[in-house]
Image 1 (cartoon, rainbow, N blue to C red):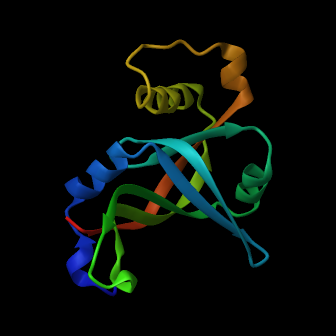
Image 2 (image 1 turned 90 degrees about the horizontal axis):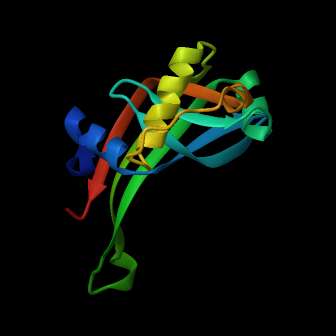
Length: 152
């Protein structure tokens, strides 16, 4: 990281960012062409999870190359300055590298879906079996990640 004073090194602070944001961006690559997509996600303290339809660009790319980059950011506004070119984003961000794993075990799949849904609702939900079968759930096994903040 170029600006050491902005690096977040405490695991609890990184976990707090992952717990507070709602959308994660995943970046994939194939044949030197990047592809990025936002997904709802959950963090269990070790891995990240997201769900998807069974087909589409993201899934086809992940089947061929499971390595991805992910980013989560909580934007808090702008850090103003007397000089317009010195304005900066006030933010806390986690960026990482990982491998996507297609979850096959139904119990693990439902547990991950419950984690994702719990981010948006306090209600306990039951997933219809047909919906569970029609939904892919992926786990990101994290290779590395780092946090960065500015303006706090």
